[in-house]
Image 1 (spheres, each protein chain N blue to C red):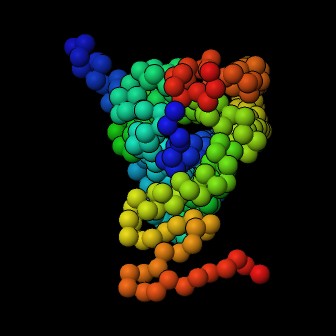
Image 2: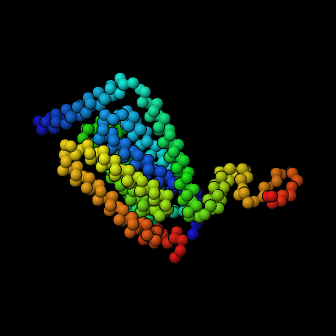
Length: 221
Length: 110
């Protein structure tokens, strides 16, 4: 087995930072949508700038994964979902998350050319991008059981859920109580589902093997 | 006829969106720009915090997987790969004398 080199650690650390930045972008977007009068320039400016910063760290995450020789990942694994031999399912979720995030970014840049309703629905893909990034982090991440990484993931999920319920749902509830009650319930159930899945999967010993790690990379037979 | 009907249905919506966007842009330009430095400062702070956290997590991931010595060795190997003549060595190893100098015997620390 080839010992990991610094690029492998850089891949993992930049992946976690990308997820945290993505969470901040999501929270700022939720605040901007729900409270348009609350410091609009500040919130929107930070939303855009941190979204661009997320691309930097996301790029570092992808490039270091490709360059690093430990997991033998190539450019195809970074572009084609579920093509990787290394934890293909969970890595594929990260690839799809990147595509969804990229579509939200690209359609925002020339947003003025799109009908507003189309742009809004495309921008709502960020929720799916963020959720897939969380699943990718837990499923692919070698650090799912690392206390620091786990704590950061927990903080990110709790913050996103609290802001969604406390700001977005609270604002929408006034106009469409049934719709937003259903969305709030769905959000809570999704987070609970991810928690139950993580407790029974990535946080259990043996996940490296069952998640599809090639046998030559496993520490023990 | 049907083509023109479809076009007239989507064009007004596009125009409305453009007008709203243009109005928003005008409003943005009219407003005092005192929030822009704040946006810049917070963005820089976020970038520095993200880079710092990245470094901490890098070390954390390495220490958990390979132990502190392995992280140190891998960083030294990476630096030596980038700068082969830098002569960076782990602290446990004695320094290599420069060419043409007489080696000085060293003892352990007091």
